[in-house]
Image 1 (tube, each protein chain N blue to C red):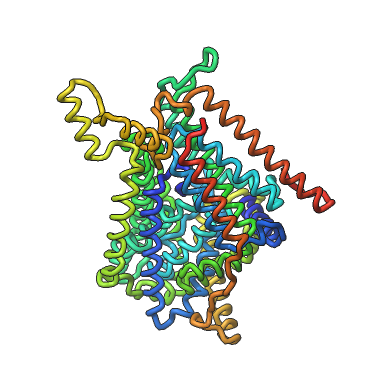
Image 2 (image 1 turned 60 degrees about the horizontal axis):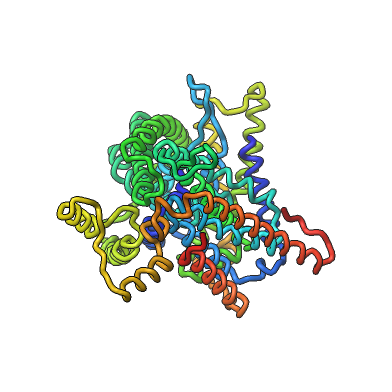
Length: 258
Length: 344
C-alpha cells in the first residue's frame, strides 16, 4: 500500500519538476542526455579505490541541482532504490579486503572501506546525474529524443503508453488493495492464495482497457507510421553545455589532482 | 536484482547495452511483421504498466512471516508471447531506471538482459512453451510456470554475478557470490512460479483465448539473428578488444605472460622498462593522462593519494567546494529572480 501511494506521488512530483523553466530545463534533451551519460561513463570508469579523484565529479550534481532549482527532498529519497545492492557489494569488499590502506590516528582504514566509500560515491553521482536529466525533461521531449536517436517508433510508443498508464493502473491497484484491506480486517499484505485472482482481475480489466485505448486511437486516425520525429535543433548553448561537461569530466578523469 | 552503474565497468555495461539494444531491434521487427502489430502495441504498453503496478502489491509468503511481490517476465510471456512480453518488460525497466532510480542508466543493458532477454526470449521458448505445447492444463501451467520462473531468476542472478565479476568493482569471489545469490533466487523463483501459475490458471479459466494466442506466437527464429549477430560481433570486438585492454582490473594475457616470464627469469616481480630520457618523459605524460589505468589510480594504487589521509582530506575539500559552488549558484539565482527558490 505504502509502495503504491509513494510511486504515484513520485511520478507526479517528477512531472511537475520537469515542467519548470530554468536554464537547464531549456537545454535540448540531447544535450541533457549527453551530459548525464558522459558523467556516468567517466565516473563508472574509476577503479575501486579512486574515492578522492572521483569526488571531483560531485561538482556536477551540486551545480546542476542549483541551476535547475531542483529540491533535494524529492531526488535524494530515490537513492534508496539503488542503495541495497551497492551496499551489499561494498560491505562484501570491506569483509574481503582487510589490508590497511592508511591510519587515522590509531584507526586503520582498510582498502575495503575505501572501496565501499568509492562505490557509494559513484552510486550517488550516477543516480543524481540520471535523475537530474529526467527531472528537467518532460516525458514527451524524452520520447522525441529517443525517436531522433533512431529507437524504433513502436517501442517508443510502448514506452510512452506504459508510462502514461502506470499512473492510472496504480490508482486502480490502490483502490483494489484498499477494498481488499477493508474486507480482510485491515490486513497489510494480500494472502498468497488471493494473489492470483487479484492480479488476474487486474490483468483482464487492463487488457479490456487496452482494447478500448486501441479503438479510441484508431478512431482518431492513429497509425504507427504516422509518428514523426520532432525537428528541434541543437543551439549554441546546448553544444557549449555538452562541450563544457565533456571537457571537465575528461579533465577530472585524465589528470590526477590528489 | 537491478544492477547499478556503480558496480559496472563501462566496457561490460556498453557490451550489454549493445546486446539489449539489438534484442529490442529484432523484437520490434518481429512484432511489426505480425498482422495484429498495431493492436498489440497498446496491449504491450498497458501490460507493462500492469506489471509495474503488480510489483507494488506485496503478498505474505506462508510460513516465513515475510512478504514478496511478482517479477512478471514469465507471467507476461504466458499472456502475450515471449517477444511482446520482452518489449513490455524493457519499457518497464527503462521507466524504473529513469523515474525511480531502480537500476542505472549505463546498467540498463545489463538489466534488460538479465530481467527481460533471459526470461522472455530464452527461458520462455525453451522451457515454458514446450511444456504447454501438448495442450494447456492446470498441472502443465503449474509445472511450466515454476520451472520457467526458477530458470529465469537463476540465470538472471548468474548474469548479475558474471557482469559484476567481469567489471572488477566488487571483491567477492565468484563462488561466494554465487553461494549467496543463487539459493535466494531459487526460493524467490519457486514462490514467483506458484503465483504466476495461479494467475495464468485464473486467466486461462476466464479467457482461454488469451493464453492460447500467446502460445501461437512464432517467436524469434535463428534466421532473424544472422545480421544482428554480425553487427554484435563487430561491436564486441571493438568494446572487448579496445576498451577492455585499458579497462581490465587484472593484467591481460600478454601482461600476465610477460610478468610470469620476467618473474621466472629474474626471480622477482618486475615489469619490462625502457631506459632513456624520451621513454621517461613519455611514461611521465602517460602516468598523468592515462585513461582507465588498470582501473585504479594512475600512480601506484597501493600507495597513492587515493588510499591516504591526504586523499580523504582532498575529497572532503572537494565536497565543500562543490556544495559551496551549488549554494553560490542558488544564491545568485535567488538574487536575480528576487524571490526564494526551494533548494538544499
